Image 1: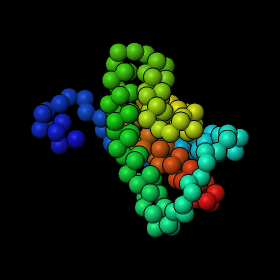
Image 2 (image 1 turned 120 degrees about the vertical axis):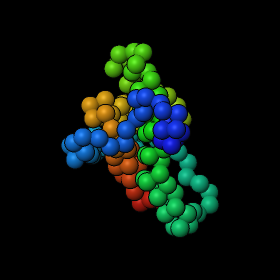
Image 3 (image 1 turned 60 degrees about the vertical axis):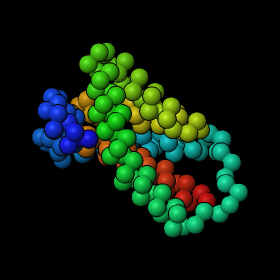
Length: 156
């Protein structure tokens, strides 16, 4: 996508990195821990979905974990924070853009996970607003997914 933007000479392309990367990653890590705590509380108190009838192989779980922790944050944050949130932010205020992008983000996730995913999406949007680089919400998302996947792996 960045190549397409570069070739089309598109202005105001979402940046992955920028000035003050360590501070941005720290903000992302803090928000990721907060979102993870919300998810763990949700998993503890909310009714769990019915587990699958068949046993999933550890190798399959490992593959899904790698996708969830490494790939999903990169692609989803580019779409939801870099494009959706940034586009909404140009037309609406910070609060409306944050809530709307988090709601859209939550809608593309499983129903039983919508509430904590909404919180994670809102935190990711706020971190992106503050840092202006996608590495920060990618960090939020990766930490959140790592904690949730780890909890689910131990629950199986």
